Length: 382
Ligand SMILES: CCCCC/C=C\C/C=C\CCCCCCCC(=O)SCCNC(=O)CCNC(=O)[C@H](O)C(C)(C)COP(=O)(O)OP(=O)(O)OC[C@H]1O[C@@H](n2cnc3c(N)ncnc32)[C@H](O)[C@@H]1OP(=O)(O)O
Image (cartoon, rainbow, N blue to C red; front, side, top):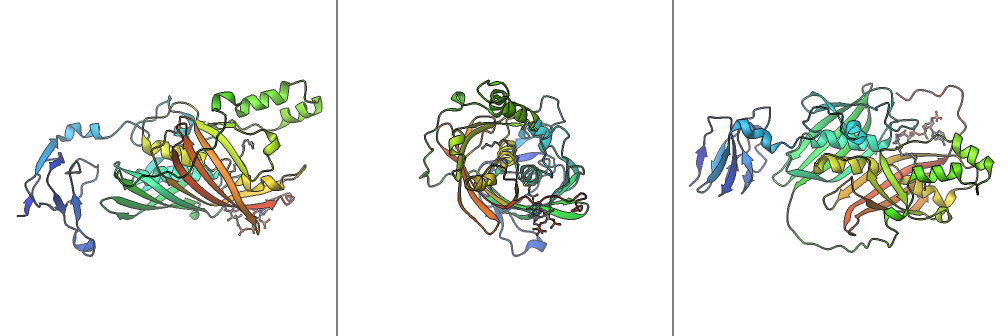
């Protein structure tokens, strides 16, 4: 007893009871119909662009009609749609993208953002994930991503993010993102998104027993101590003062002292500086950004020696988000490096919240070499 539903207005219809089906159109003949269930919604006004679709009621249907003028209530005011406001944390500004065209965005390396000799890998991951997230139904959250760093990014030119809508299913959606500079693909990301679902539950990973962040010093405090503590020789203090200090928008507190710096592992607490907008998609981009900061370097720990200068670059990076993330609250990053071989260091990571819940799992491979002395005029890579 299927019957077609015709909407003559710009409203949003939220299904309260029954099952509705939207058949695939002619170009997608091989794709199965979407089946809409309780609390799914359809209708014009859910998006700025208008798509026509036949909706067929398979049984008696009860809908809540949200008039178009109230459509904004479904859109949280966050970086995804809000005007730029000065109270956004530096991280939200770093992840802010300019929409250029449908599925094309422009990102920048802000002068106040931390940089090293090339675009920070976490910036590519965070911005590309932000671009992908903007093209996905806001009920679907990223649950996994896989990134490859192809070419060193140039800090001085914008990055163009082109999103390809690989698939939109009823539970999952997949996006591929290419980041380009001067027409060259410098970075790629593939990310999968999923609607919230209830299912089997277990957690075998146990959070290590470490001191709470309140009992540990952050990087600024460690540096201050190095500069002022009279127990350090003055030569050491002068050297520490000359070292370039990067004020990262992420606060970090290390759980072990320098005695364990040769172990192929590292545990540290971190959180975003400043208050972030209450938006799960944004919080996932922020931790994705932070996750590349001190990760592959752990594979160099057993090889550190006085005077060693290293060349360390992330090659690829994967994240699995198990549970909702709060990036402005403390999370413990537990990193281990099971192997270094052939110029490549491999690291695995786990992030726990303060309650000991495993929030994310991560892996990365990086190029790790002794630094070659640089010539006077290094060749431009782009
Ligand atoms: C425990 C307490 C710690 C407290 C620390 C406190 C605070 C933290 C503060 C700072 C930490 C910041 C660290 C952040 C790092 C995060 C990681 C990243 O973001 S890495 C950036 C993302 N990744 C990339 O951009 C990689 C992009 N990909 C590439 O560049 C290329 O694919 C490639 C990997 C280089 C491979 O290219 P190719 O096949 O052409 O390889 P080549 O071997 O030929 O090398 C090319 C080129 O690279 C340079 N190079 C290579 N090896 C060296 C070396 N050993 N030394 C110097 N330079 C090297 C060189 O220019 C080569 O060109 P050429 O052959 O002409 O010399």
